[in-house]
Image 1 (cartoon, rainbow, N blue to C red):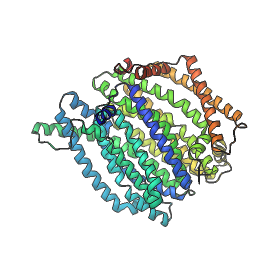
Image 2: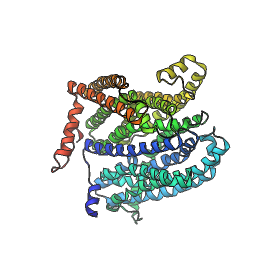
Image 3: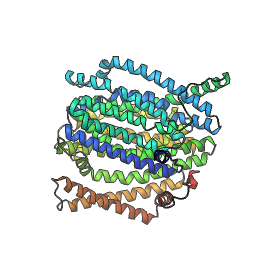
Length: 566
């Protein structure tokens, strides 16, 4: 029984769509748990000062994780492991892995010790608007959370083994278990220990995130044991290290720039009304559902294939594979974005509207979600294009572009903050378009607005840069984009009309009334979307249908990649 279970979770996935579907479904499961987590947090605390402290405590640990964990992530290390494994040199691959593990542990433990002692001063930068009482509690939580980057970084290291053997099932389970640990902390630790117990739940989730990677590692030919090797082997390992560092540091800085952007935005939010940081995080987490299920899934699933295609010198197929993933990202993202924006109040109320999370919190969070959603497709495509650059060993250009627009995003936040205080026109536009004119503390909306504006500008520049470096995308991409836009707009219009028609039928003051109204309006919008795409004879629908048939109706045959994935 145990072996059968290990064989099941260790199964390989070779096609782009099959792997993306698996990662997408697992991401969806993880996000369901994340939404349950957020609902429990919202009902227990509301959008208030306690959650502001809790969310602010993640800033420095997250920066540490991004800085050190990204140096051993699959997007940097996987091409080197592939190269050794393809050449049949398992010993070289294991030497590289062992050295990575040793370096990572030494460096992150030293960094954690330094940050632990400097934490009081560093919190003056990440949460400057907190009062002394809140700052004292924030210090305790932030120091405890320093265990998280250590555990998650080790999980990143083991994920190289998981993905090199295409064991996507194990990779997909890790975020699910992470959120499960946080929920356990909220339900069982928090009642006894307060906010400290909630943080212990985060540590439990990080441990589970690491533990689930172990079966693939234990069944592989890799180990943590240091082995003796010749001078020639030492030269080869040194060469690998030099190349990894050259590739990794721009990527690490690029990811750090994103985290620094979020940190800067939340530092600004610490000066706003109590609950502003909580509203920002609730909205950011909700938009991340679409980003994780669609953008992350397709970019992660495409990456190994992109590495192989570029390494083999097949540049036309490499560009075509990027275009295939981009088409499917657009196909899934645009209708979902439009429907989420139309149904934003129903979605937020159903997911978060319980306990201390009142109607004002709902409306403000819904407005922030809608503004974030404007850039979800752009965020997803940026993930794909950046991984395309990484597959080619080019990391400096994404670093420069992403860093510039990270700085621009923070600059836009200050510009919008000035406008909301000095421009009646801008203030009225921001409040009226999202229907929050009668609510206080609407200044929080400038942060997602700055974020989305920066992301959209970032995509425009990165897209043109990618085309200039690797060639134009096939014409089918443009055709698919406009078909998807038309279908998404039709779906949004249908959902909006259904919302108005259903409003008198269902009791808007009850959970089930709002749920049923939103569900029926959403299903109607999806139906119209499918009808329009079918009328267009959309290529993505045909590809997905073929992929599903391979996966579910032909189980006895091996799953093979589609011709455009070879």
